[in-house]
Length: 294
Image (spheres, rainbow, N blue to C red):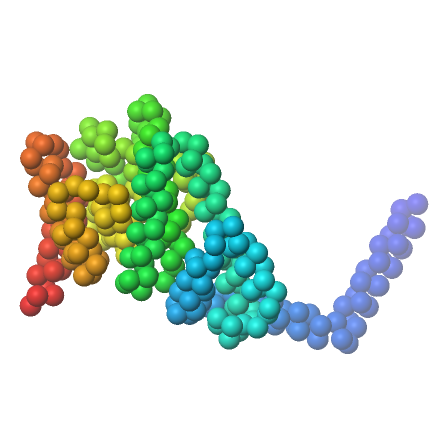
């Protein structure tokens, strides 16, 4: 019995070695390996041209809301690489847009269920303002700006205990002044909700939501866009809002400088605590604007 088993094992070993000695086997393995390395390198280095992304997203947004899905399918079916000049890149770009559109629709439904009509309208307006600023200042991912603007107030009308729990779970830096100011909790809580409930892992989006009320030093362009969009959305009617809109359209930095000055003065008049993030953001942007002035 053991002898027969040993013979079978030796025979199996012989057949296996014979298979590997097949003269084309190593060649096929090499071809397969090279193909996979090429495919991986293409995916790693593929960057969509900013002009192509902007044009596609502009054309997409010009479609009636009820026809956007059909328009996407029709464009994908053409396979003419109209936007990028590269068929593989074109397909990946359309896949990206499709995913983002489906994602935005999903969050839109969630916001309708969890926000008042007034807050939902504000969120849509901030989303639109984010798109406008993204296009104005050449931000390459217009749909990311749209999405971040849409969800910036996702926790705004959650109960205080829910906001507090989410805030305290956050791995982001939450200072003492913020913990004492309920009005800013929703930004921190919103970022945590997006991360834990919806699986959003894009730190630029999470930071844009988290800091849209207080700002911080070292803000990305997306963070500035959402912060300013929240200040200038079409329904805003606070004193000096027209000046705020004018400054925001001059440059992101000019807008942030004016917005932070306005916010700080309002906090001082209210005798409110000021988070260190806001002070650091103001000092940084003021120094930057002074350097630009020479």
